[in-house]
Length: 199
Image 1: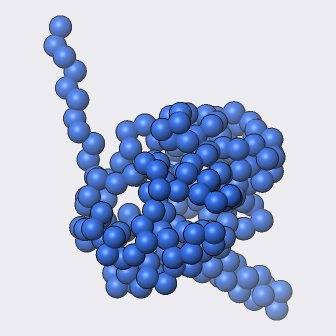
Image 2: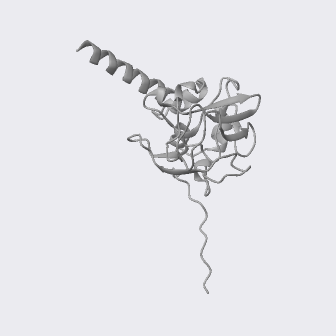
Image 3: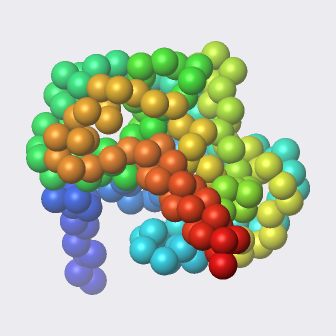
């Protein structure tokens, strides 16, 4: 019987192999930190690409994922030089724009979930059903309201902390961080509401 050929993972963005290239992004294990079953699929948000969906319902307060800063599933980068040494290709910048984030509890540090949490920004921030929380180096992703089986997991990108050096690095390639995208989406929604109210 012929053996099945196993191909090494390819870089999704065409640059350096990155956390988003993980071959088992929904694995429930200590390796990934996921504590509940999820699946990836096309996001319900137009243009958002893939999203993560609950494979079973869970109640408000349920811990969906647990990680520790500086470990294999949550590496931390403290400077543009350190980040660019790990991801040196020009094609890596769009990947960083999509997946790099930061927390007010770790000022100046850029984090990368491995594999990515892939939780998109709720078009209306009030629609967010998850949030990440830090206690020291321990990060958890928590359900902020009851989630039904099949619901897309969503967050408010505005809760991501600003890291000036990351924003400058991405701006050099005409890109923005998830935090900037969240602010932009919410500003556009507010402007639309004001113009509708004026009609």
